[in-house]
Image (cartoon, rainbow, N blue to C red; front, side):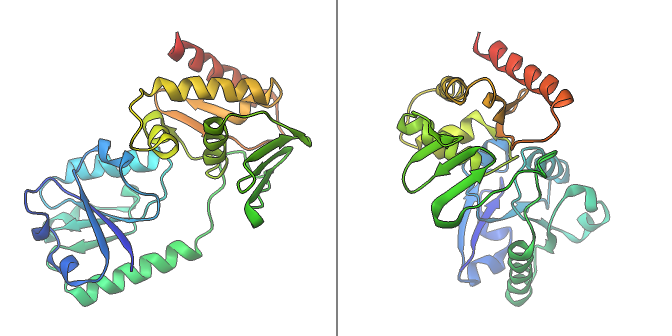
Length: 256
C-alpha cells in the first residue's frame, strides 16, 4: 500500500482521477495551494490536479523543488495539457484523468521503485560530509547525534540540549541540505497540538546555535525569506564564512 496525496480545488475530488478509488492505496486530499505543503507527509507520491489550471500547477511544482522537497510529483492532465509540460516542471510522471486502474497502478509501481533506488542528492558543497544512521546514531564530522539515547556531542563532549532543542537538531540533521519553513518545523517538531507561533522556532534555532558554539553555529543555516536548513561541514571556509555571516545577519534581522 502506497501513501498518496492529491492536491485539487475541485469540490468532488473523486472526479479528478476516478481510478484512484479502485486501488488499495491511502489517499489524502489537500487544497491546491502552497499552504498544503506543510500538511503533506514526507513519504508520499503527490498527484497535482492540473486539468483546469496549468499555471497554478506549474507554480506549485517550482515551489516544491525550491523548498528542497524530493516528493515525486504526478500531474493529472487532460489531453491538451500534454503540449505544455516539459522537464523543467520537475515532475516524475504525467497521467491523463481517464487513465485505467491498471495503468495507474503500473505508473505508481515504477515511481516507487525509482524513488527507492535513487540516491539522495547531496547538499551544495556537502560532498565531504559523512553520515552513518546505523543503530540510530548520526555522524556528521565532529557532531554526533544519538537518536535513541537523545544525546548529542561535539568532539566527544556532550551538548546540553533541552528536549525540543534536541528534537529540532535531530530533525534538521536527518535532512541535510533540505530547507524547511518555520511552519514546517513547527509542525514536525512541536506537532499539530502546539498553539505557539513560528517565532518559537527562531528562539530555539538561536539557542541551538549558541550551544553549538561559534565554530559550529554555521551548521544551521538560514535561507532568506524561506526558513532553515542543516549545512554539513565543508572543507572550504573562505567564501562559506562570508555566506554564513550573511545568513546569521538575516536571522538577527528576522528576530528584531
